[in-house]
Each structure stands twice: as structure tokens, then as C-alpha cells.
Image: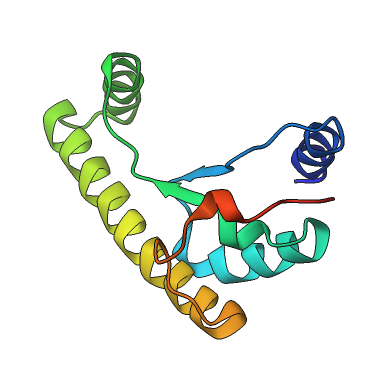
Length: 120
């Protein structure tokens, strides 16, 4: 995490306008993560975007190999991962919406993110 914070701060200090993306966040730790990142980078949570993980070619190959390693049916394994990732995304959207409502008084995706400047 320290390396990611360091990299984001360097990018911001260099003058780049960024929109951080989180894929498949852990709903159990997302609120804490957002709070910590807001301490490190002003308004981070207002500009971060959650993205759903999808099974693309390379991901499918990796999951097939993992299923083989575990000795389970590949199609069932991939289906369970899709379900898990979808649930994480949906719950993550709920968590970030609640966090933004509580912290900033706005809902997730209820604001124009280009109006928010990130500073480190």
C-alpha cells in the first residue's frame, strides 16, 4: 500500500489529473481504505471509481490453471469467481455510497468528478 500511495502522490505532484480505479474491492475493508486514502490524498474518495472485474481471455486462462491446480471443474470455478466478483462490486458500490454520504454529503456517482481536484 505504501508504494501505491507514493506513486499516486508523485503522479499528482507532477501535475497529472487522475481518476483512481479500484477493481474487486474487499467490501469489508473498503471504508477503512477510503478513510486512510482521504488522509493521504485530499478528496481521494470523491474521485475514485469502482470497476467490476470481468473474465477476459488472460483472466480466463489464469482461472482455468487455478481450477486445474485445485482439481475442480473449470467452468464451475469460473462461474463462482464471476459471482464473487459481482457481489464484491455491488457491495463495494454500497460501501462507497454510504461512505461518501457520511463523509461528504453526496452519493457515489452523484457528482461530476472532474470538478474535484486531487492534491497530495
